[in-house]
Amino acid sequence: DADVKFSMFETEYKIGTAIDSTIRTDKELQAKLNRYFNTVVNEHNMKWGPYVQNSAPAREQIDWAKKLGMKHIRGHAFVWEKPIGSDGKTPLVAPQALKEDGTVIDDKEQLQKYIKEWIYRLADDYAGEIDEWDVVNEIATKDAFRKVHGDDMMDDWFKWADEATTDSLLFYNDFAHSYVNAIPTETYGDIYK
Picture (spheres, rainbow, N blue to C red):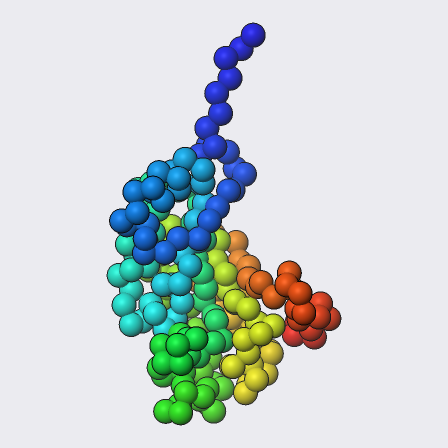
């Protein structure tokens, strides 16, 4: 006849959701986040282009998540090979990775240098705060860097992420495999040869 109480924030089972800038102002969201979740992932503002343009929104979102009791935070994403947003003008990678016409620079070594510096910068900015990182995002459908320079680039991205985030789990994030008319499963195998 024991009186047992359960606190989901103390469990190791992660129950999470994506957050955006509304976390700072939406009281209903804050209450639900605090009540139902113990894990968050930053939806957009840690991506390369948005972050180098203005890192403050990402920092504010993570600080709010911690203030609301989140125990686990996932960083998203070190590399997303989508140069320009769906609006046709918002840069989603750092400008130095692109030529004036919006295509990827031809110098693979220079591009890899930029990516390595970026991974180390973001990892350093959130050292000790992020449990998990999405190293690459949507590679089956977004391949701007690899289309020019080859899939082997990813080996270095994971190596650098591992070096820069020694205590974090590293992941590949995607969505296409769960949709109708999705990328065939063998495509992933081809990429990871």
